[in-house]
Image (tube, rainbow, N blue to C red):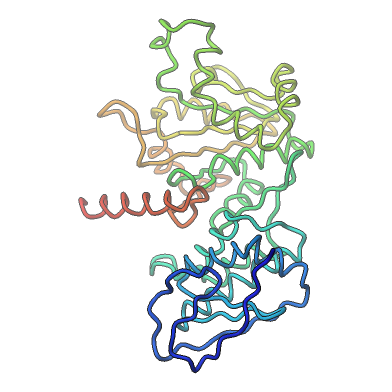
Length: 357
């Protein structure tokens, strides 16, 4: 049974409990409320979530209290937090109006995009980021589910992959670089824009070093390729993925297997490109054939190459900047779409690296 909360008189000095019924943050004397009205009670129920869990999540993470008053929500807190929380709630409601569901991950992403940004990123306003959750946002159609970029950087990345023949996605783990690249590839494949999908990784350990392991080469290599299989299975039925692999319309193979080929009419993704050597990167880039699109993804902070061996990703970034038809998109911890703790871990490591530098 849904818990309904009445209104609290604002003149009372005691701290209101809000939806979460947990200890609230310290309340200052100038606290007032922002009142939001939602015309569709059915959508408001979805916005609040089962047992108001969605509102509780906003409360916990944004330092506000939210009170239910019929078809209205009262957001109580300091001005900045109150305005940001109200913007998040409006954006999530607009998402529901567009026929999209709201998950805990969607709320987490909306909260991150509604929070103040570092000075270096202030060219993209928080309000513009929040617009990613409105009906005008980008959506990729796959056989299993629609995919939405959740941040401004992800939206720009997807747009560039459609507009350019070669795109680079560079940034930390969990920012959607590979996931969105595969989603774009599946969308183009379904739409007849390409005839096949080719996914590759350097698989540093997948050469002769695996020779002592039992099984054929596919069985030895598959564990290193599993993240690519996982992404495909998110967008296409598993049986269809298997059938397309058997028909060689989807290929998943180590980078070394690309040598000597011309990849025409294909959507090609090289994942974990920071572990490609300079020569491997040059070899891969020059495989691009007529009618093909190529995406290179990587994280410059997770290079597994032997000491002294330069990363082909960093070399390509330096050499290809400014080349027509080549685009670079960069991601930060702000774009992480995994567990919120992942974003904080990345930020901590980045701060440590900056301190060492």
